[in-house]
Image (cartoon, rainbow, N blue to C red; front, side, top):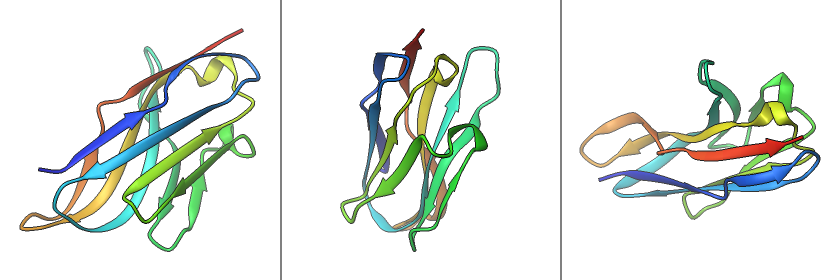
Length: 119
């Protein structure tokens, strides 16, 4: 069974930093891409950042220059969030495009981690 588990959320003051981590586990043959999405109350879930298997990254305009996505060879992805603003407050979800043993290519989601930025 494939799982994505996020960690690192919390409460921080505006201007502060947080680092989110996402650990993928299970019968994963390959990780095609990983990403971070967020959903604020009353709003749709939106892409924050993504990274492909060859390291290409993509960021929402609202976080460019402040957030950095990365991944390692141990099925982990990270979202370094600097200069946080109150409008960054949301539940952040890890997302992964995986090729899984006996299941093929699928999209998986983590359970979400709350990030709250106080003004």
